[in-house]
Image (cartoon, rainbow, N blue to C red; front, side, top):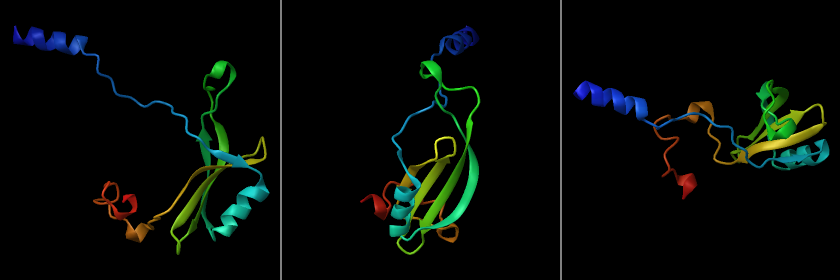
Length: 123
């Protein structure tokens, strides 16, 4: 009987966990406006890559194949600021997808404390 109840619970369980596409605001502008802001913050390019980005197509649905965009990270290791860009070559536009402060470099990372909400930066 216990096995039957267990099987029924498994069959009718509705809990589901999974990834979902979210939208978040990004700032897009021209080359001149984007890089004058990065230069004003004293940030320098530290890495670049080609990223695969899901984009929307007709009927507000995501296209089957992602766009290939240039992604780049700029940092100022003294003020500890960063800017994460993506470049859209089809539209000749630069988008800031993340920027912030409290940058930690590889030799400063402590995986035991980095994600804790009581870090000084969150106070």
